[in-house]
Amino acid sequence: MDYLTQYSSLTRSLPPLVLLVFLSITTTITATTTIPALRTTTTTFNVTALTFSESYSPLFSEFNIQRSPDDKTVRLLLSRFSGSGIISSDYYNYGFFSASIKMPSEHTAGIVVAFYTSNVDTFERNHDELDIEFLGNTNGKPWRFQTNMYGNGSVSRGREERYRMWFDPSKDSHRYSILWNPKRIIFYVDNVPIREVIHNPSMRGDYPSKPMSIYATIWDASSWATNGGREKVNYQFEPFVTEFTDLVLEGCIVDPNEQILSTNCTDRIETLIAKDYSSISSEGYKSMKWFRENHMYYSYCYDNIRYPVPPPECVIVSSERDMFKTTGRLREKFKFNGSHRHHRGRSSRRRNNRGVASDQKNDVM
Image: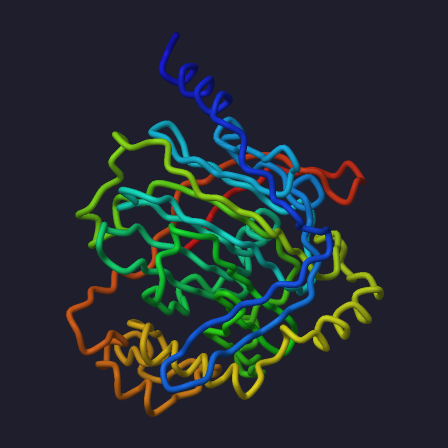
């Protein structure tokens, strides 16, 4: 029996996931975050948690994807043969996309876990994208992650921000969310807003506007993810496992090939804009300010080398500006490595039960 066969047998024989108890289909998600100098902030979003079969399909390396018996949790594995990934079964014209994610627990240097939206499979030359990427970690050091945004194929105008975690994301599941509507984009960690992009008309096509799918992947980024590529994935400790649960996909489902989007989306988008997660309260802004001043270590808005004139959506905050050099890095010994494209996985998926399917490509910054 070759190694791949042995490994596939091993993954099939792993003990089943612990069932999620008392989790109803409609879930109230509450995040409590203690912030220095501020009172404890509690944010509650009322959203609907879906099963895997209701929301996602395999993207690539299905032998490295494990689903719990109740179909509410999915585990993505990375081995020396392949990473793995899933993709939403539908495209969404704006929406709120969320999952509780637990990172691999040990020896994670060189490993990247990504939760993101994209339409590169349909609009290969002018795709849109919104990213949350968790970068490989060296034991004993804070985990790092980044957010990014692209519109209309503007890959030369990446809008990266990088941060350090204020907790260990491998110890417990934490919720990560992307809100995307015609007015703004908000990235959340445990329902705490960490980044907001207001739609400025001067952005033109740089603001994501075409229907997108939602992806989750784990893959080998040894060439750049940890200490500039000096720390590689150590496959002595494979498989590396990341776990996704509380899967939330809220938005207007569309066929991306239709030239005129369904008029049904007009009402759905208005409903989306009215949701509590589509705006930030005054307490939320205080939380975001604390996070950015204490945990952000790179921002493109303050990178005067890349952008002598900040992009139009940038709101220059004096307390943030004073933290950075002209390169957008903290005035500390951090190294910013830019963005890197990774390998592509291929799969097919269903579309709105109409039998329309296409090859999918995993391509994320």
